View 1: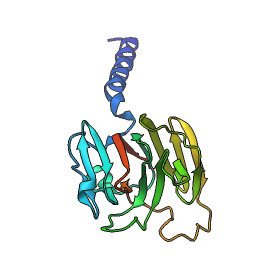
View 2: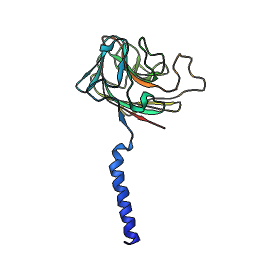
View 3: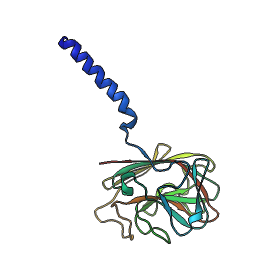
View 4: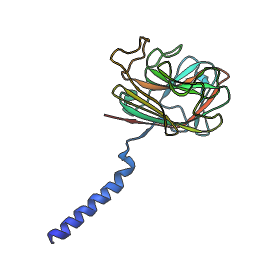
Amino acid sequence: MTKKLVFVLLFAGLLLAGCQTSPQAGGWKSLFDGKTLSGWKASENKDTFTVKDGMIVAHGPRSHLFYIGPVNNADFKNFEFKADVMTTPGSNSGIYFHTEYQEKDWPAKGFECQVNTTHTDPKKTGGLYGIQDVMNNAPSKDNQWFNYYIKVEGKHVIIKIDGKTTVDWTEPEEPPRTSGRKISHGTLALQGHDPKSIVYYKKIMVRPLP
């Protein structure tokens, strides 16, 4: 066998291996099977979260749904997150990161990424709640799916709604004097805000980063 032929075969083998592994190359992991709440644990009002037609539905008294499943042992420091979200008129919700399970009240640890198109709270979808808010004009529309993207790397947080950056924030050397709001590590959670709010989540994915 000639050296040229060996080279061609090796090159072809590398291309084939690359094609076979490319679906895994991104490292995205699903956190929701589309059928059950397996891997998730709700806090004070368990029935606020249900699954319907491949979606997690947040509708009921205040509760938070914490991820406790096997992906990265439910502990994320640097990561990318994405989900499809749909609000309904007057509804409020949120996506928490670097948090931990808490049986009652609003989570004391971690950051909330706001989900709110037309609720009376002026802090709207795409804001890092109480840190770098999107005020008054939401980049989302009720009854329409939008993509929610969060990236945390080091002390840098980026949030994008449908590909448009709404937050680009780096935690300062002296973090805000707000209890629990400090870049660290932890799990993810979805918020059920109040009985009048109905918000839908699907295609919930995370990609741990080094």
